[in-house]
Length: 191
Image (tube, rainbow, N blue to C red):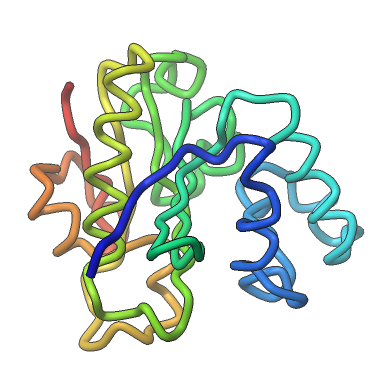
């Protein structure tokens, strides 16, 4: 499978929109869940989430990466500074930073979400996205990347996989730095 990885810039909006489809990927989230506080998430609908992520993409920098097979986007990974996903830093979440100041440090990045087209699942797309994310973070001056994946997943169809699989991050060289909930390690890659 020939997969290429690209940063999501405004010119790639049509490919991103096609990947997420009419439903907006995970129940109309459009990858805004960790960007918005709970009150905003409750009042937002699919269209408002879509408009917000488009505005974010248009303003830059790229909020993540797209995986392409030929000309079609088959996967997405949200990656960027922890500060870009404030709800991911909430101290009550398993993804909260070990050091509170990391939530504001632009050199501490987070991989917070994945979405892979159904027909492409189980084919190594997330592995390629994580490898591309390491390169993207390094080129952007990050000093470390953190993720909070799920351990328990016996197949590529698990709903919880929007955070990624621990196995994928282990293979990429990430190490667990905290476990606040069984099966959900906070993992780190030092650049």
